[in-house]
Image 1 (cartoon, one colour):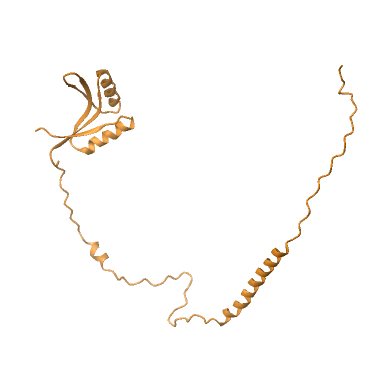
Image 2 (image 1 turned 60 degrees about the vertical axis):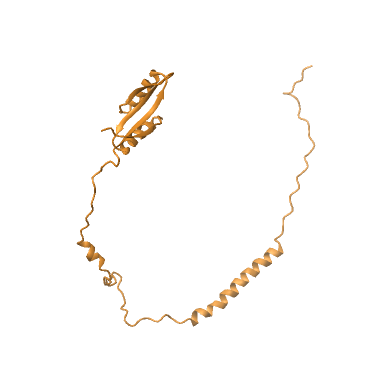
Length: 183
């Protein structure tokens, strides 16, 4: 059985119940009473202070004060200070000693220590891309061999720190080794 919904006559539905509207609220009497009391209190306050402005004494005006013009500046105050004159022609001498190393120290920077020479060569190449020259030093023990990648020697720690910051920028952590200079 097939049904023809297109030509079907509409059926009547039951009327919907109307929604009840909320009752309109009246202005609360208590709120109105508080507002009126606040307005009345403010008016009473203004009424009390209106006479106080008339009874206040005007500020005394000095007899020597001249009326100022709009563009006139006040007179320049007298200088009380003498240090300006003293410092103006003062010469300061500063002794700057030449930089001398304290204990003939030398600084080296170790960038890595590897078991294989290939890893050390890779680290040396990465350092060379930063414009620095590194050395690979072979350290031999009885049962092991290590390859250290080192920079230096540096005369001052500041120079070693400058290169250290360059290497930290490419994620190479280093340590600075302090040793006495060999004469």
